[in-house]
Length: 77
Image 1 (cartoon, rainbow, N blue to C red):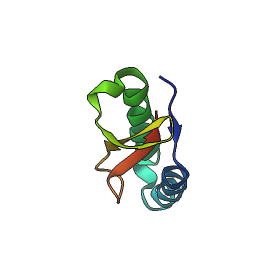
Image 2: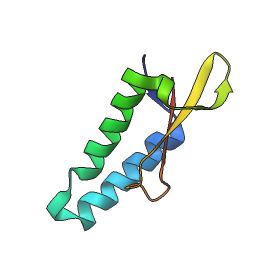
Image 3: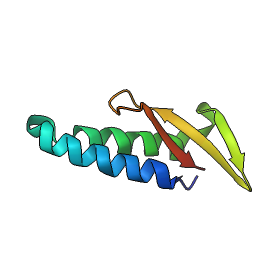
Image 4: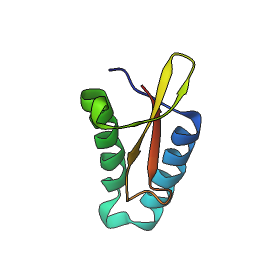
């Protein structure tokens, strides 16, 4: 399944990643790895992630990522 991050999720991920790299130099890639794993989960097993809402022909699904301050990664699947 092709996954596209919502604009808000992409913005949040970019902001969180910048903060993480500046403030967590010993584990600067950890956040990016977690986001990538969330996307892979949606791509390979979207059925295991419940639909948050529908937007036109797309289903919006949210993956819980505790490492993010907001805790959620929203994607169109």
